[in-house]
Image (cartoon, rainbow, N blue to C red):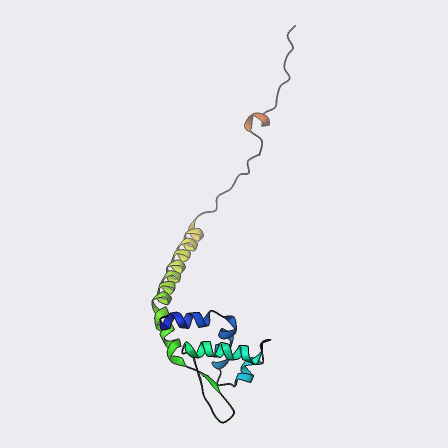
Length: 136
């Protein structure tokens, strides 16, 4: 699997995205990362291995403490890949904003027309019906 696909695959899981969000605030131990989740430490360790294989985090070793920290390189690669799409959406929103401003300007300069409410009954039914003359 190519690195970009591996990165997106790792980020597909909401628990791993939450771990990344936590590590964006600074390094943390496995225990600290596990606290907000209702999962076992081995499950968190498996999530961390996936993130580490994808190059999103780095795990250190300081005596008994194994701090995890965010690895910015992969996130920068994602940002570069998303660049053209970001420009596309920004340009699309700019065009939409221009179009909406044009519509609003037209609406402000048009005179208000009186609208008539039409009856739901057909014209024949609305006419007064004259009583028919009986022929003898």
